[in-house]
Amino acid sequence: MWRKLQQIWTTPDLRNSILLVLLALVVFRVGAHLPIPGVDAVALRNFFAQNQFLGLLNIFSGGGLENFSVVMLGVGPYITASIIVQLLTMIVPRMEEISKDGEAGQRRINQYTRYLTVPLAVLQGYGFIAILRQQAGGRLVGALDPWQLAVSLAMVTAGTIFLMWLGEIISERKVGNGISLLIFAGIVASVPQQIQQVAATFDPTQLFSVIAFLVVALVTVVGVVVVTEAQRNIPVNYARMMRGPHAVGGATTHLPLRLLQAGVIPIIFAISVILFPPMVAQFFVRSQADWLVQAAEFTITLFQNQVFYAVAYFVLVFGFTYFYTAVIFKPDQIAENLQKQGGFIPGIRPGSSTVEHLGQTMNRIIFPGALFLSAIAILPLALQSFTGSQLLVIGGTSVLIVVQVVIETMRQINAQLVMRDYEEL
Image (cartoon, rainbow, N blue to C red; front, side, top):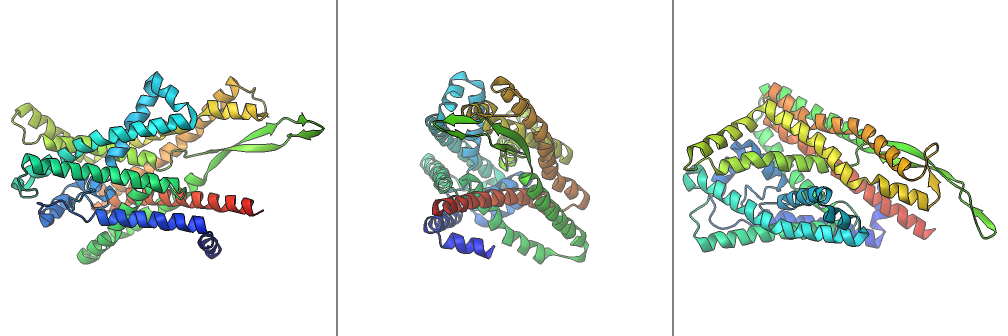
């Protein structure tokens, strides 16, 4: 480990990239503590502490939501826009053609995602402000005239766009996924406060709950590391070809298919989706229409039911694992590249047969990965029902995301170190 750290520090461009990423995370944390004027900070923190859904969303915004800061929305609108654009890519033929247009097509898809992020940030910002104005008799957020409301919406929208830009800057440095690292920073920043709260309110009756949380954290860390590193190796042979007077090729290698191709993205997508209905429902609790009030109260009650919440969470994580794998894993492109390079899978004909074989293999190996990821996601919920500790719900999901982000970041840094070793040779 120390040799790796020394190698990172003595590599100027890699060291500068990591320092830039750390600076970006510091800027994000500073922004999370710059509040919009006119908010009762103490009452706002108490409100989020009593609301499970908004409290969980506050964690992934890095505390910016409970501080009513300029980055209160976090990267939520960008994640929602990504989900919508990726769905459209699979449904709309024109979008699918653009996505297949190599790097230029991917740039256009990213640009569409950025454009969609702006109106989504405005809508979500207005929704949050409206919800907070309805709570506690209007004491959380003071009366805002149209001009103040417009300025507040402009500030929170600009905050989201700024975080999106920071995330892309981090991703360009190839030392981790920028959006995931911002969520990681928000989760880690809340850990000291959670430890302080547990220590301040600890009594001997909570000992079992704390031990259960530590066991869940350890099992999650070990399980996620094992499943993330697991892969299925598909043997690949390369035909011997004559290039001038020399024979090239004839090598045997393998094509690694990871058990969990989607990484941490399904968890982030699932949380974004499952928090949306109760959040919208709270907006209509004080509506003038009785049927709308009843529908809103029913939605809130339904999502507060631990059994329904766990089942919905499980299904969403499982489904998004398959969905995101289908987005990033392209068997037709892999088969085409193998054929161009003279490679083939033993016993499988090049072309459509290779595409079908790769697709079937991935569908088989992704099932246990999706099942494991979904089970780990709801395991803290089951323990929370057994022990009555709210810490387990937040802790289990947070540990899952933190471990995945750390593994992905370490993998990218190691890849850069290996690349530099080859350059030196």
